[in-house]
Image (cartoon, rainbow, N blue to C red; front, top):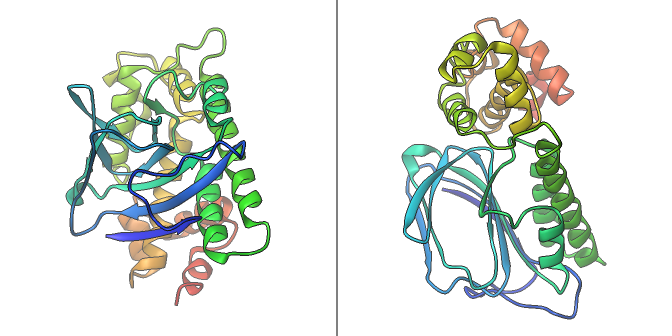
Amino acid sequence: MISISGDAHSWQERGIEDKEQFLAVNWCGYQRLQTRSLSRNREHGRVDFQLIYVTGGKGRFRFLNETIEVPSGSLVVYTPGQPQHYSYQAEDGTEVYWIHFTGYSAYDYLQQFGLLKQPVHTVGMIDEVTALFKKIIQELNSHRPLGNHMVNAYLLEMLTLLGRRLQTAEEPGAQGRHPDINQMIAFIHEKYSDSLSISELAGECSLSVFRFIHKFKEVTGMTPMKYITEIRINEAKKLLSESSLHVKEIAAVVGYDNPLYFSRIFRSTVGIPPSEYKKQFQ
């Protein structure tokens, strides 16, 4: 398992409650399951808030007496005192970002942004949100002056982005979460490297291509092809940074038969060619 975290306090399993600050980050981290599974069982929950952003694979979460599979692109919200029972299986390749926070305005912000309507939200892959998680972890580990104010600002920006995504999906005429679309999201995460036909995905939902694209964008904030491209490029970035595979091999692994086309898509998305990106980690 790859695990990276940053902390504002020494770890406390029950968390920390702070009513003196309007918003305060306690801990933040990233986990990627590779060889062993992970489970958490907190019958009485914690005294702080927790967000879990699933960015790869899937997790299993139990709410009341029901266990559900939560796919990539989902956000799980835990409030103080709420029981926490969840697990990640190594074979699923689960990847998550998580953050614990407190403060006298935390509840109000979450409620205002629509994050308390249900425990699990489909928000899709939001690069700005994962970037903010990384910034918070880095800031917590750097211990620079005024670092607590910086991480709190990052957290507020993150909550705002997530709230905007949810409220966009709830605009008049939008139906928000759609079970068939959510199934297709999970399917795409499993089969992203295959040649996926939008018309076939639409057919699986019994929707026209136009309606499928429209509904998919309501749920994720982007078109199906852009969503697939983001998954492929994110996986390519992991392989470029962690493996010894050549660019041509990585292109094939993530679903591009033409390495030149892959390089062009990668550069337009990331800003630099994949070969240059790989050099940063050698």
